[in-house]
Image (cartoon, rainbow over all chains, first blue to last red; front, side, top):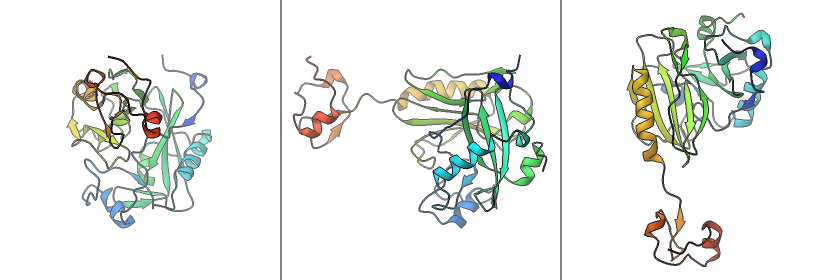
Length: 134
Length: 135
């Protein structure tokens, strides 16, 4: 039986998950390109992934603030797919990262049943494909 | 949907887990699993391209920044293989406790049976070394 909303642990920002954090010492343009399927990888190895940035304007404190704020808006919750993961979206006033080779103002945030909150930049098109109601 | 949880070395911490046995491609996303091993090494699993049933899992081991990967990412389409790789590789990234050598000038990784000299008495050594062990 899927857990109910009441069974979800209180949200806390998972500060030990650095995968999508801003990259220092690399030009933002190169970081953006590295997030594209056909782009250069820069220091990145493996598959292209979403990255917050540009560094240093996008700080960890700002990421925490954005992601924690996102999960507190029930109207921004996306249709549930994983039984133990709730997902939310948020639009920021300026570019906060890159994905698929382009900059974006949108973030996608996951809130795990155990309470961990973590997110990443995402395009508006991707969010729409996941059920975003703009 | 059945959740799959890899067995990790003692002292590891799972940050989140969304590894499921499922044929629903909507559940194949970037951030599926993340954990920190006792020595500070991160292990993470994602599916690429996201939501694409023709994609594959990617397992990464890294320390600190994601860009500081310890081995080349490992890709597979098989969830059981993901679990096997994590369970087999993770213990290899867990080092023995870090001790201070006699000279106190350089940190070395020695397992307790290899210690044949007294602990450093320098202030630096006293701060880092655990209680003396007499073998």
